[in-house]
Amino acid sequence: MADAAGIFEPAPEGPWEWIGNELIDPAGDTIARVRSDVLYCDSERLLVESVPGPRKFRARATTGDGRVFTLAQSGFTVNVLHALCDGRAYELRRTNIWRKERYIVGEQGIVAYVSPLISGKVQFRPGPAYASLPTVDAVFLSWGCVLVDSPVRRPRV
Image (cartoon, rainbow, N blue to C red; front, side, top):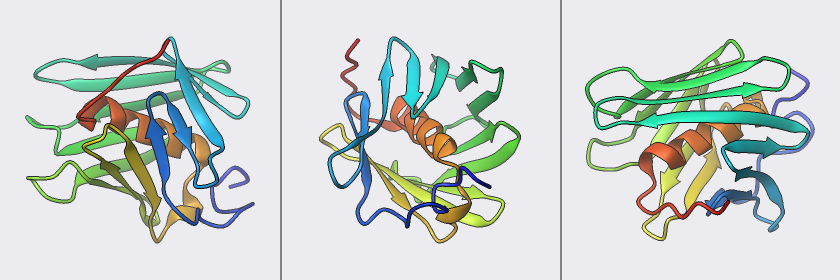
């Protein structure tokens, strides 16, 4: 996997954080940003459509070259979300029914943890199988968690 997050650089020293509509790394550099429902990550642009309805959460993103990324709840609650990122399957499970923190499981195991904070920030931390997670997947999945779990969301257009 040439674009896997851990291939060209080690796992981040600290958490990435969604602050508003920007994903910031521990050094303060912007990894991704969302503007007018378009998710920008490196040279990738994903048009994001989401349905945050009271009974069903769904998000879908499409790249300029037609690759599709989806995230949806599979049951009555949002405790478990299922994602398909350009053919790669993930499951996003809450760590506890009383908390909004999630772990993201891919084919190799737990790839990351996502934790919404009371401040409105959402932290993304690498898991044991982080090296198998493509950066664009990490960005889309963590943004999906912002949409469904963040206690405060201040979108800037």
